[in-house]
Image (cartoon, rainbow, N blue to C red; front, side, top):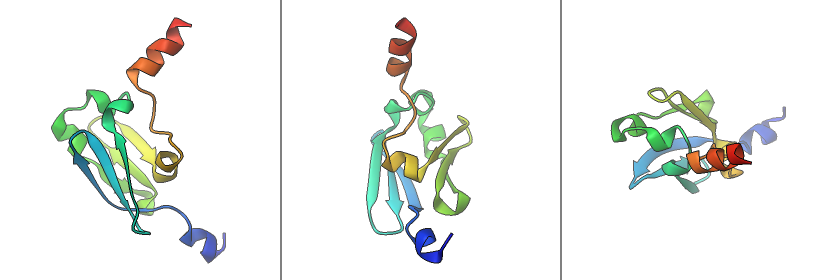
Length: 94
């Protein structure tokens, strides 16, 4: 992989929880957000467990050790934040 390709990889520089939103600061200055309630594991997490989030893999991922959840920054950018309970129930009902 060329260094120019590595530079384009989305990397988190910070993460915080704000009113139920997971807010991720990116190296390029952007901030992305998603509702924790849209992820089946995060939706059941306590406030303390939700705030216990680590930036992993040189900024390319997020890890919540208390709920055993991992999300990639690129996946979040692509809209892949895991499935909510509602989505899972709808899929099972089919």
